Length: 226
Ligand code: ADP
Ligand code: ADP
Figure 1 (tube, helix red, strand yellow):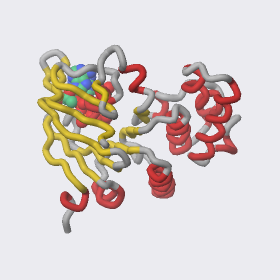
Figure 2 (cartoon, rainbow, N blue to C red):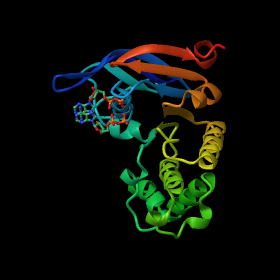
Figure 3 (cartoon, protein in one colour):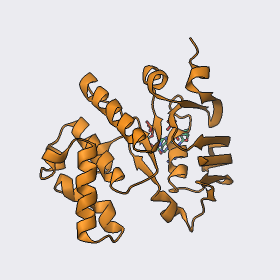
Figure 4 (cartoon, rainbow, N blue to C red):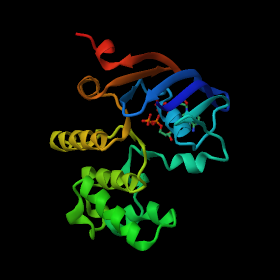
């Protein structure tokens, strides 16, 4: 089945046309890269997929259910977003409190919250640092805390905006391995990136935007045929 269906979606900021009739689908279990130059509409599209904004025309469906203002909050639990800058996503005084924030907001009892925190920190390899202040961590570690916070919500789709940005080569390799494990655990992944090598190596499918339109989409093999 399809994880995401985008049908004829347009969006504007005042008079700026950010998305101009986008149509594409993402299958469950896909590893998708979202590419395109700055201003192409990637961030806007991510806001729509996350239900933070509603399209002006067209529709976004998640697992076959059309997203509306009314159900956006519920559907958003199924689609986690890891923003480009982890400092936008990290608020608490300890790593474990930060990761606990989402599940606690769901109203889960404390034991379930702690189980989720433990599981998510283990998944990102941050178990040892759970009592630390996130503000003392390296950029790569902060990014992993942000990912743990999203995983603790047990989403089905995770969207990551430029997750490789500002990481050293070792941290990039670690992150790519983490993405691979997330995929193996059953997640559908969408990664916004400018990194063509990563796209060719990692993705099953590619979506390329330009000026708010779909410039190209399809399987990585077809698009990076060499
Ligand atoms: P990308 O993420 O690919 O760089 P964006 O979605 O950020 O693209 O931007 C798409 C278009 O919408 C660009 O022309 C950008 O300048 C414009 N835009 C994005 N955010 C805003 C905003 N908050 N207000 C006005 N224009 C915006
Ligand atoms: P990204 O690197 O993810 O594409 P951008 O640099 O395009 O992000 O945008 C960073 C932030 O600035 C986003 O929140 C976006 O909505 C906002 N933004 C982008 N273009 C404009 C614009 N023309 N006017 C106002 N805000 C904008």
